[in-house]
Amino acid sequence: MKIFLVDDERILRVSLADELRDAGHQIFEFAEASGALQSLTRENPEMVITDIRMPQMDGLELLERIREVSPATTVVIMTAYASVDTAIKALKLGAYDYLSKPFRSDEVIHMIDRVNELRNIKQDNQRLQNQISHQYNFSGFTGESNQVKQMFELIQSVADSAASVLITGETGTGKELLANIIHYNSNRKNKAFIKVSCAILAKEVFESELFGHVKGAFTGAEKERKGRFEMADKGSLYLDDVDDIPLELQVKLLRVLQEQEIEPVGSSQTIKIDVRLITSTKYDLKKLISEGRFRDDLFYRLNVIPIHIPPLRERSEDIPVLTERFIREFCPVNPLKLDPAVISILQEYNWPGNVRELRNLTERLCLTFPGKEIRPEHLPSEYLLPSEPEAKSLSSWDLEKILDKTEVDLLKAALARSGGNKTKAARLLHLPLSTFRTKADKHGVE
Image (cartoon, rainbow, N blue to C red):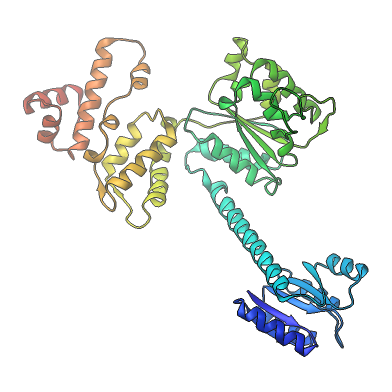
């Protein structure tokens, strides 16, 4: 570390400086506080160790000036005139620690190590905060479709609200990502964001996980434990797969939302909380209500701000920009190039796994064909075949219509994969060229 050592007592200053240099630190010595203050902005030390009793400007005044000029600099006070009042005043002014002379040099070295460790933790935390802010800003959810634009207009208008949010969408559409974006763009972004997957919690521990328990509340409760709601106090709590909450516990969750207080298992005491609740589900909760599997009163409490993420097949215009984003993520050095025919095929595909499936496909292509141009023949075969949902979308289960549509899709896919060469396309489908041409003419496939 770069350290300023300020003390008008030369023998102590020089001997301590030598010890700290031997320990690997860069030491600047000052006999007066004014000299240290003048060099502060130029050298930008990580730490200042200063005596209190010095002529002209004492250590406490120097501490106050350092806090004004360089608040990130750690300051340690040392003095032979130790008193509780002086120590308390130094700590109130922002000193990290207080040393009473005489002290051993190894004590100072250990203290510097602690300061260095703390600084590293703070720097790592700041890097993580910056990474999170970048990852979960509004550009974190990629899309140019009207559906995505309207969704983000809504999110921006309600981000700072404390109202409950219910996110709906199929598997792989990005519900958890959207929950992160909502929290980290709200006025609670510097508070806790606790996530719970309701689908993986056993029914027996559900209440304890959410609301906590006291010691001895049940067999195995050997100590008190905070629940997820209490852990998220002043922040946000995200409940994924909220449809999996047992019916008998839904009424307790409703009470928490109404009263903003929880009661740990085994306790008669209530704890006030301030939590913004974000929930998500891939199911139609209204249908579950009609089946008696979800409480309608809880649904209306959760659904204050409803946000629906459309499936990828309904916003195919987002596929090119999503693919480009994933290419930058997985192969930034040797990026893939996509043949226009590939984009057309991807936009025609049904995407049962939604954005998650597109991300996985892009990662696979980046690992398999780094730096190459991706043509239709590089795609896995399933992306060239019509999917079942497309057949279901026909007006009726008419076999002839389904077969005709399947034939058209295969003819188009074969042409795309062969770059428009009919001979190659016929070979892909194991058809004579004449038969291929007859079928293409029949369906008007160019």
